[in-house]
Image 1 (cartoon, rainbow, N blue to C red):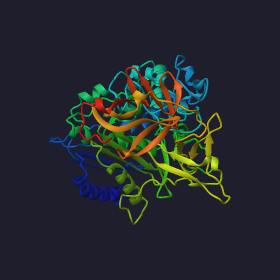
Image 2 (image 1 turned 90 degrees about the vertical axis):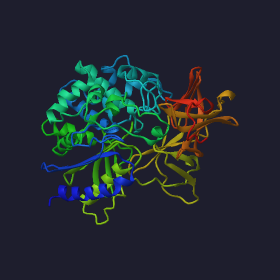
Image 3 (image 1 turned 120 degrees about the horizontal axis):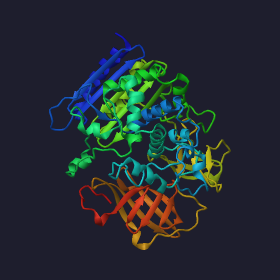
Image 4 (image 1 turned 120 degrees about the vertical axis):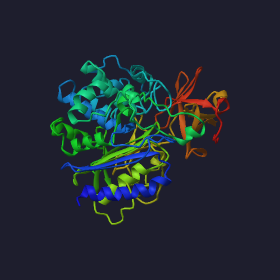
Length: 519
């Protein structure tokens, strides 16, 4: 039995045991190797209460896994001479602008590469069309990016963002003279035989063989998961397990003649903040070491009722994909870790261990570096002064010389300082203080609290869905009702409402739906 069939049999047992207890209506799982061997497994139904089975042709939304495919589409455009990875975006979008408190001309340093490796400095969401707001006009979504503020100086470090990838897709739209979904279909999908794949929501909605996304939080409130994703290049790909395996075979085959091998290898090049950095995020590709020594390339996706994990092991020549139509579980990551451990011959392949991301040192000899730092997914690290000499962790400064960003020298992950001792006093309007909620489809999702404490304004961001263990971020006034938080996100208090990180905030007292609200 070959490695694909062996791993597939193990996966099938794993899914049949775990899926009934994981609130998953349907799943499709696929494995392949560079020799063309395949295994697929389909489970469950396309929608809760329905009887249509999941097939290998059933379309799923893959959410942020779209970013990896979009970067490949951009490489096709580069190969055709339509643009260059190191072109400044102003060459192709001369009217584009964006706000920044860190530099006077931020657009000058933004290149196509920086859009794809997420070092341009963009925040994650746009004012129009996001994970929280409706709107399927992609052009309007892109135009609204100019109303956002960068979170840090361009090129300073990597920070995951939808907006850079959406701009990269928009560049392809501009230089190709056609729609991004059409270019992707003609220049990549058709050449790889991915006939079921599309970035076009109209094709997705009209398809009879597609899964429906599920999220219990909305279902319990009687609300529907939005079906159209406005962030097209960064999250709007729909595909099936058969096509996902064709994409994996393309990656394992180093481009298969569709993209030059040297150009495809650019996806693996991640920005290095330190010489010994082992992992990082390249051109929309995570380059990781799982379980310490297994090299894994991957990208996952989550949202709008769907979860996905697509991954491959270059040294082993094996790849896999997990597609799911529910967000109420973590099976996609457990399965990916299980496959990696099984293929690597681990005897304890129980599906639980995954990526290894060591935390930076928690003690520092320089008291100026002490404080609380927070990562993208809410991880908190306390740097505590110590008496003995030693090597301090890497802490990057902002343009004013403030120690602001803690770096994990193994992964390149960055953590933001939550309080800057040198920040000037700031004050919130009294009427703005209180509890707010982000919402999706009118349903409250996460609470926030605005408060004044002495000379400084603060925003408390919920952790684990509650403000009882909130993360407190210092706010600095930047004028016109806007405040810059310690993590570079912007709070706006405008006559038509409040927003934080471009996510609309609804005062708790104004919520139409109150079930499950925990202030």
